[in-house]
Image (cartoon, rainbow, N blue to C red; front, top):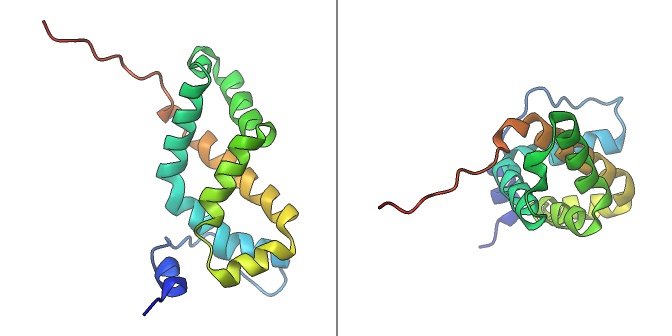
Length: 139
């Protein structure tokens, strides 16, 4: 039997700081109940996807100052529509059908929240984005 909705929710990490209460908006509730756990679950994949993005863009990221790296991440997420859509797919692919139906009711506002949290997650992991050490052939 296909129990995808429960299976998919079962693997998501709990985030104690992502509180839900009656006074919050439906967008904030969806963010805390669905988006944040998915982003935490998908964090290792998001990091590798951004590493690939850096490589596809000729590794210029590695030559930038910390401030410029922050701008680079922000621009990649907010201005590169192909990259942005790929990130959205990584997140939306972890929705249940019910969550997807909720998402499409206000996708614009929820996309903004998803991308802002994704940006914060990449920025908080900026130290992992260092130039890979080139492997040399042993003599």
